[in-house]
Length: 335
Image (cartoon, rainbow, N blue to C red; front, side, top):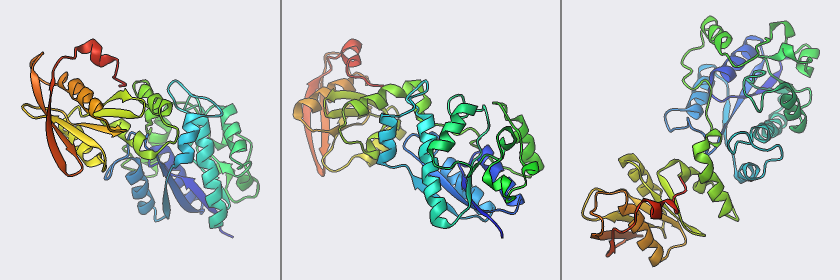
């Protein structure tokens, strides 16, 4: 009987190779791709999600794209196994993904799960000891196959039962991708633009923004984290934040992201970033945000400046003095 497996397919090189190996071993494959607000290579027409879909289409396998939900955000806030150098709960994240994969395995009638993980490639989640913890706590004991490094580990149930020929599996180890790149050439695997993936949780410059959301949110939501990718963020009140564009692209993104009940500000008499105020809305906070904004314009110090305020479908003007120096602004800046 032909066996069926669930692949964790990121769209990168390693998971693509793992899929190709399983197909060549006559395994039916279905793919899962997970997205989150923290992916650095996710876009509408590029990045890991679209690459995973492209790979699935190329190999004619079904794929389901799963958006990590609020339960995942709570894991990021309070990981059982702690953080790496940033606020990256890599071990807890892998356990989360594989629990979801196990659920889908049972729903779809598949026999096991496989990934493109390589022993020793990632410092936190791909050590020998942590790989074992991840397998055990995900509930996939014996049913999690890592074909690129399988021969470094005890045989899994798919190998013991003869569903997968262990002699055709590999023993890749370490951070170099040279073996995988040679495999890609040999197997005619092309166009893998995001081989290592990327996660903002590992970027130290991003840490203050994430911690700020956690510190000021009793209930988490996806939008707060999606907005972290855009512009400069200023904590102007316990439940209020001003987000300022750094570029025209940021300005456009903020205008699109602004929701009903949120305020946008621009300087009326010169080139200006767009500022949106999210959270609680208050006239004093608008004036403070306008003064912060002017620090990033060419307005003359001490000049009285006209500010356009947009709220829902209405516009109005008010004036503030450009009187905030770098030190004054700095105390509000998150990142």
